[in-house]
Image 1: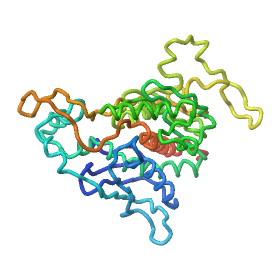
Image 2 (image 1 turned 30 degrees about the vertical axis):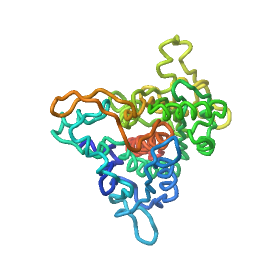
Image 3 (image 1 turned 135 degrees about the vertical axis):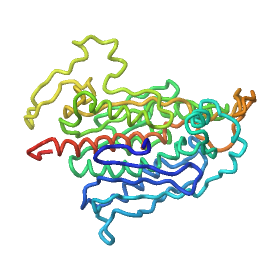
Image 4 (image 1 turned 90 degrees about the vertical axis):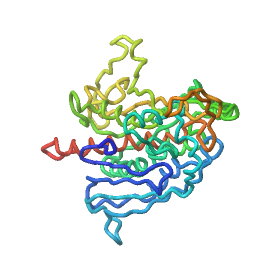
Length: 367
């Protein structure tokens, strides 16, 4: 049950880190939409490992196969379940044999054993960030649906690494600017310092964390629902389901605690160009009362340092023996650069689901 996400656009992912492959079944996609192969390939390429010294050296091309849901010849969606499969080509399951009895510190080894009584030892199975290849593929389709229907643009970037913070204009930043550096930070004044911080941790056998910020521009007013269906809550649940995520905020987020209401409130005005209701400021982050207000949605996700470090650590075995463990193998020194398309994917999936809900809620069909 926990492997399925969404209500009207339902996404189910499957597969393990070092199994034969991973995939996704997307149910609820409207029919007649040209499947966006170029967008899916582009997002998978941004997420894949082996992108240089800032990521895991695992070599996976992350090409995908379409198993169902498209009309042969035209590539149009049929309205039936779309199944995509990404085969693992550089899996090394045997490299994890020594971990069959050892619980790695801050990994899901112990908790999966506590929950299920057994676990996928190789790479953590579905606890691995490798699972997100399926989310990113589905998210790219959702993003295309949003772009075609409403011109929605979703852009995420690395905003903080190990306390080194960027200054980025979320109203204007583009993916081309984000991808201009390996760390995916469009602020040239700090991107090199971020890279050096990641490199320093890698040389020391350690890891670092930070923050990914994201904007969704062009989202119409009226998406979301009161109380338990709040758009804020849906985004929080989606983004906190990403591996290594540890914090979430919308708009001013935690900084709002230091503000007065007079500072935080967003006054309304009428746009002189198109006559629509706007806000003078956007401290709410585009969401008020759990429903989008038509302004840019602004959010951020904090990611912890990757749990796999190459220093000796105290731990225990399944039998209760106290041991010292030192990791080996291929791992990211910082998840942030590859987390950028993951964040974009989850935002797109939430917004696409909300778009479909909004269509049902409006009798006049204007959305």
